Amino acid sequence: MRILGLSGYYHDSAAALLVDGQLVAAAQEERFSRVKHDSGFPGKAAAWCLEAGGVAPRELDAVAFYDKPFLKFERLLETYLAFAPRGFASFRKAMPVWIREKLFLKGLIAKELKALDPDVDWAARLLFSEHHMSHAASAFYPSPFEEAVVLTMDGVGEWATGSAALGSGTELQIFKEMHFPHSLGLLYSALTYYLGFKVNSGEYKVMGLAPYGEPTHARTMLDKLIDVKPDGSFRLDQAYFNYCTGLTMTNARFDALFGRPPRTPDQPLEQFHMDIAASVQAVTEEVMLRLTRSLAAETGRRTLCLAGGVALNCVANGKILRDGKFDEIWIQPAAGDAGGSVGAAYLAYHQLHDRPRRRSNEDAMSGAYLGPEFAQGEIEARLRAVGAEFTVLSDEELTDAAAQDLSDGKALGWFQGRMEFGPRALGNRSIIADPRSPEMQKTLNLKVKFRESFRPFAPAVLEEDCQAWFDLDRTSPYMLLVAEVAERHRIAETEEDRKLFGIERLNRPRSAVPAITHVDHSARIQTVSTATNPRFHALLSRFKGLTGCPILVNTSFNVRGEPIVHTPEDAFRCFMGSGIERLAVGNCWLRKEAQTAPETHDYREQFALD
Image (tube, rainbow, N blue to C red; front, top):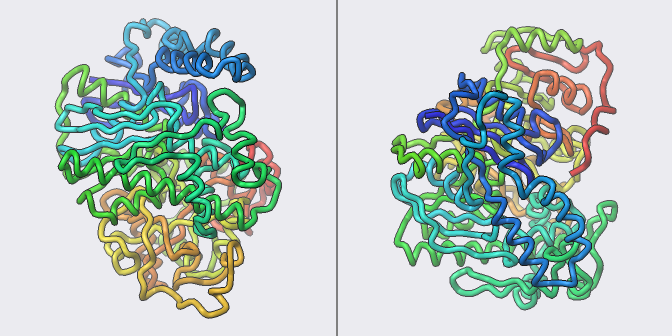
């Protein structure tokens, strides 16, 4: 049985292909279109998935979409009616798009699918799942668990903003929901907007900014913005928000509560903004802990799955793990809307067609390496076509050269194997560097990624060495858990250090691996195993042999505002337009100083800043 899952028309459009219950391909449209968070129909991603799986369009048994547009339209109409006459400007902007396109999404999707095969009756094969069921299915069915509680939290789907489900075998049933306008995801997005970052894109910046501040406004948020019950259920006071009726997230009353208007993107970050970030992060963690504690007590289950955009908050995930109410936690690596394509396909397979699950002690996401790859011959031809100068090395020579240059302080673009599915680069479309350098965080942020200096970087660590370096007693293959650097690797604070506040703390080395140690001694950890990524594991092992350190900085292969690179040409352009000094594409080895093609700094202007 062959099922194509789709998500789209909001943000992070994606496609996924399930063949006889096995996830064989998944990719986001942004990687093909080069438009970050592309919200259009995922036509290129869908076409690639079918090609990768060797499935002709006419051979598909079903196409499953992750959302139910009529329910979403109902929510929009009821919201506008409830707040009328406020919200007319937003209503006037939204309705033409819905009446022209989104309300008749089945016909629109069927029309788009005609590009795959014009002779197929696509409307007869289309299925629609509810948004939060798609999220829940994306978390439970690929997980290694036979039974689990499944918690999903995001901005909003149709009506639901959060849900709790029980999964057992092929059965998956939601038994609790929270409904719009009460949303933990929208609360976090509202503060993202207030801090001057882009909604649906900049939330991770808020999480990264939080450790520079103190949660001095958390009490105000809990008293005024959000009423949280002991079981984690909550209500938001809509008097402070504008997302139901307006074109902004917050309003003048919100501004008055915190004593100033929203920050504009060009204004400097002050201690106030860092404290706001720390406060909303603390509130989010409190809600998540109350929810997971109550679900553990109510269900008696000891395994938990997480999905939805809030599940990308790896700091909260780490605290849920350390709270100990669940023995095991599994988080969908594409937890946001892109992963909804995976969930929709699994729902069609297991619930509609009643097919059994594939049992395994491992999860079914294949390390998230589910995207396109390029054969060595094709890589060489593509690089020659863009004027690249390169040497072809053996596997061992490539590993040796990369490890040596990394130990010498070079930044390396690492393009290998299948592209990752989801927002994280996990060692196949990565920029990597030496974590021991006190200057590397600043260098990567300002000269390579062209982004804000406060942004932290994640470590990739040999799975077998994780516990020796971090306070984490399990694997974290998807970079979705935060834990602290082990005490023995930290550098003790001086009296002068303790006097520093906010961004002043940025450049003080806090451990033996300062480039991946955040100001609170935390790190967003990726454990690397030979089973899922033998080439990246070999590079880490060789770097450890040279330096004694089994860790590398791992950040996504792109510059600010650009989707992660997809093709060898994308990799070469990013290499030539940034401060990356070495590039490995397959077995092709490129040195910046050997290139004769002109540097392409202007290519960055193609991408809107996130």
